[in-house]
Length: 218
Image 1 (spheres, rainbow, N blue to C red):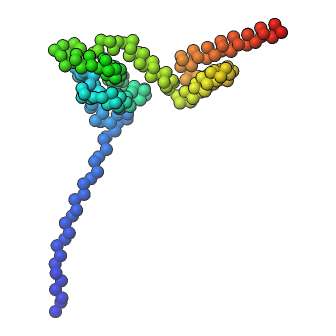
Image 2: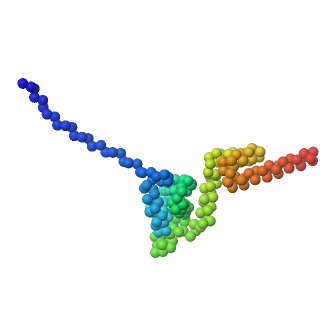
Image 3: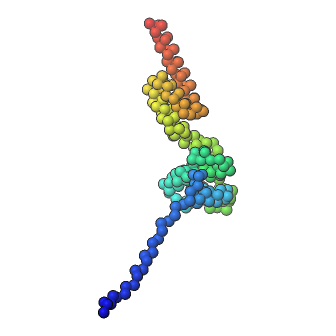
């Protein structure tokens, strides 16, 4: 008689939760969700106050404001999209980034922020969304400061320019001139490099003339 083998119920299949799918990316430098966010925010940009632009509560601390600005800047800085063909999309990115920058330079100032909170929580909110003291001149000054902190777009160009600055500070005009010319090979249309080269060349000529004069006196 064959032995009786007890029946064993098949093991229940273990449910495996698939990993979350990564956000679908595009060849524009933004994923699908970021593109949707960009469209949504730009459509109502003129109705947003600066806290909403930076996606912050009105109780945000200076540290919160700074973090929010750097987050938005990393995502929407126009330099990331210079290669983009879509002029319309570039304009949207520029509009949002300008407003983000404007918001930051108002909200990071304690005095301006306090006044702004009063303005946007009052009955004239719609007329006070843009802080009047955040003039175009101030925004340009902020952009200029940012440009000065990281001059140039090509890493090699920046490297040679920085070395030229060190050479000029040390009074080594020929080396400074040589490095500025190298920087211009990477960024031939960089106005700042050209301006600095002209300054260095003039300084070098003036020094050579002074030395020539002193030799004649001797």
